[in-house]
Image (cartoon, one colour):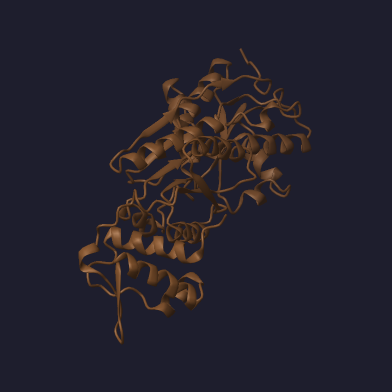
Length: 363
């Protein structure tokens, strides 16, 4: 059953007081301001404030406004005011890796009698800001978050800091923002790129191209792994053989009109490392439209060991992405952070190669 709106607002106000956002004797926003901020009725606002007055957290002064009580400022006990609800914020839900992640999270949370509220960003920073604000207002106890455009500076650092100031732990999955010290559970994307590159080099490939995502840190790290793999074997990446794309332009890259450009850029490559299995599958479709075969004409590898990789249509060599394990691990880390507000964990999961039929041996 959904929590009543007045209780959600009460929890948000408690968190603001607990974090020091509202200090002793400070006036909180007016009923009208709160109603506009949250989209609630004035009656709901009054009900929330009246309850906090009874708890001794707020005091209403006729003609002046509502103020934080001196004796309770900064003393809200989060363990006593927990909602037993966790926020889960991801970029997509229909992407092949996310159902497994969500299932893993749900298994752990249910064992600890927690529910979760799911938010989606579609890898848009404005969507992320809106979702974060809603979760903060809802008074979630913790947050599991896949950052948006994590290769770039985030415009939402202020909202994320509000979670930290309120003592709400965050666990990042897949990618995290530069400079933050929050807990995270990631795959080791650099090592994944190295493994795939070494796999190709061991089979005689020295001219290796790539297609990578530039606005998510996973794409940058996977490319870094390819570069390191080449350097360890005295090889060199040619800039012209690397294609970069963003969240917004990927749909144009593979719609058909760009086929000639893609083929031209990869013409000198004998193998291509793709950002993930979906991109690898799209590249194979481009090659087939041009009458080329994988692996006879070009070897192609991906990341994630997704359903694309295992299908007979693509039969991709790839690296593992244990989606359910990542979800479970992130949820377990969050439970430990809830027990100890100072607790942090930084976990990188080691990859394994799954060898199939998309790589030709040139030796």
